[in-house]
Amino acid sequence: MIGKRIQEILDKKGMTQAELAELTGMSLAHINRIINGKSEPDKTVAKIAEALDVPVHALYSEDAQISALAIKNLEKLPADIVKAIGDRKKLDYIVLGLELSETPDVTPEEIKIIVEQMRVFKQKVKEMRKK
Image 1 (cartoon, rainbow, N blue to C red):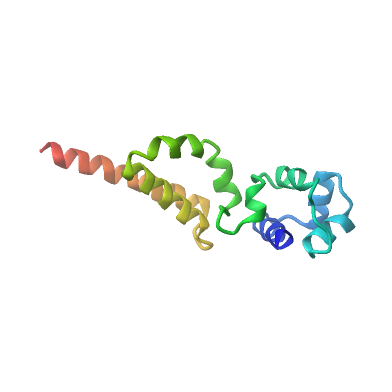
Image 2: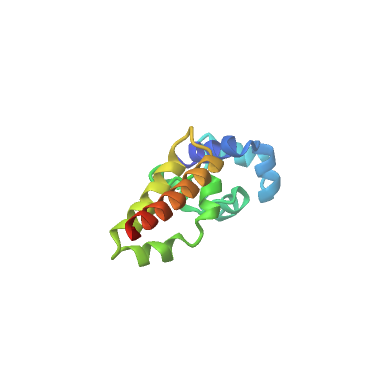
């Protein structure tokens, strides 16, 4: 249900329905109806996604959900995926990043630390192989 997804994203961002209404130019009553499943946001879904700073598909599918901050940081992901299709290692890293971003108890800051540690590890492995 799209309303549930919108509310989850609002909660993650620490936003209220009133703030979403103001950002979209919609009434609070209309936002409330969408969130409670009494109205479909057919023509306004793009406005809602933009106000929440997430892609439209993140409002529809839990499988496609990535934390709002991770989504914002992965805007170039499709090009990376296309490049990675022939490179299993790169694809594994992308999948790992997506899995981490969907883990509720891992913050975006912790994901950055994990990625940085992976880079350090990769460099150490490279140096070991030279010896």
